[in-house]
Length: 77
Image (cartoon, rainbow, N blue to C red; front, side):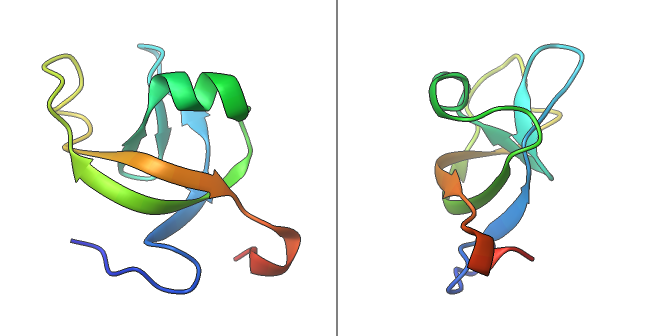
């Protein structure tokens, strides 16, 4: 399990796969949260990760980010 730092557990870019799943690095992003608050290419900081329980995406993304936020300019990697 990733360890949280000042910058969160993981920082990366919001991407979308051919199945329509949003992800950041190895982590599936919550679909509704991403649709409502982010766009492709945004840099995000993941704060909380849980096990992915969705049968549709668990093989590609065993872990899911449920709390994440836009990276502020001074926090960028």
